[in-house]
Amino acid sequence: MHTLDRVNKSYNARIRKDRTTITHADLTDPDSGDHQDITLKVLPADAILLSVSFRINTYFTGGTASAVTAAIGVSGDTDSVIAAHNIFDTTVEDVWHTGVAGVRPHGQHGGETLVARIDIVDDDLVALTAGSLDVEVVYAVPQDESA
Image 1 (cartoon, helix red, strand yellow):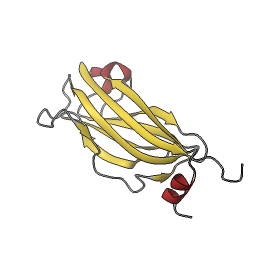
Image 2 (image 1 turned 90 degrees about the vertical axis):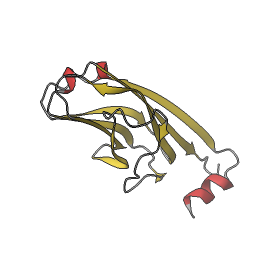
Image 3 (image 1 turned 120 degrees about the vertical axis):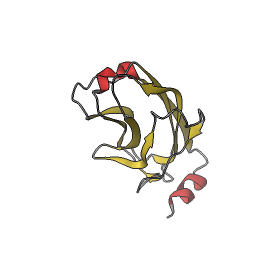
Image 4 (image 1 turned 180 degrees about the vertical axis):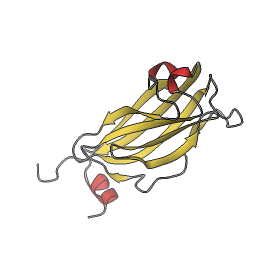
């Protein structure tokens, strides 16, 4: 059965939305040019990921960084939902983004841990002095039709 058919068939399917804010203060990795994974949500069993989007509230700046990006994915494949997106350049509009889809942007993700991977170039993440990003996750949890 197609994933959307399961959602549509189950009139008791629960659509859920979670929002996580990541700020520069959350980024504590001291290694230059490294990354840090921030846990967004451990999805319930049978969860069907419907959408992930993000909004840059304040661009990430500070230190000598030449680039800062965010990718969304699951543990072990941290860009599978949204490929790395620039959160450093001030020319990007302050609106909700869906970014460039990864290899698995929707569908069955039950029991998986969604993470945001923040990468920096030419400095340490702890050197950032500003930055705020909201990540919104929308998913459905269909109820078992045999129940």
